Image 1 (cartoon, rainbow, N blue to C red):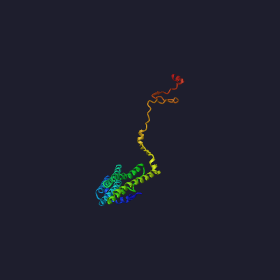
Image 2 (cartoon, one colour; image 1 turned 45 degrees about the horizontal axis):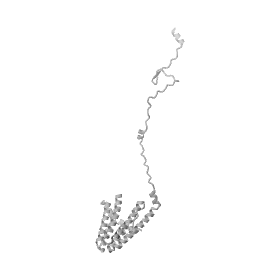
Image 3 (tube, helix red, strand yellow; image 1 turned 120 degrees about the vertical axis):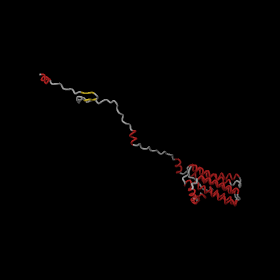
Image 4 (cartoon, rainbow, N blue to C red; image 1 turned 90 degrees about the vertical axis):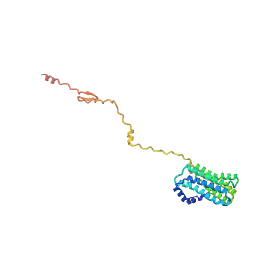
Length: 269
């Protein structure tokens, strides 16, 4: 049961032209968040200080602007690529402050304990949604008494002067909304897909080493170590050496056959 939150896509489509104009002028999404808080403060002042019937118009206009800025800040951040974690934090804080400011406008019109109870209950649905999102569930928004319904009830109080009944509806309806969101989040967290997504370990992706160039591989490969002072090869004893043949720095002389005695004798005659 989304309540008036179901009209958000239609409302965002009506604001598309304004969103493009703001993007063209490079308006910061944080500025829109702050503007929403200022509009909520103005609505609270009108509710507190103006009489019942005339207060309805300024309260309605300021709260409509507050809802418009709440829609535009996140959409503008997404359109312009300026979504940041700090921006998300500022957006949530701005919504909570704006809700509390609107309820603070009831202080002159209702008992303090009822205003405090309504303010506390109005924050519960958002805390349940944020807790569920932190646990891994989708963000849950909508009614039966969400942000849009609370703004509408403030307009009703400004138009009729029924501050006490309106605050009672805000307190009870916000508590019921928190319970509805809590049940939805609990069931979402029990789904197998959500449980697997939460329990799946993060596996580091191995990083492949870059290939080593061929020149680097040649440079890194060990060069053959020269063998120093290696002994000269020994000559083969079975092969005679010619006179004057050098092997290993030693001169070898072929032995001469002995002379024939007869030849010697004939030569002496």
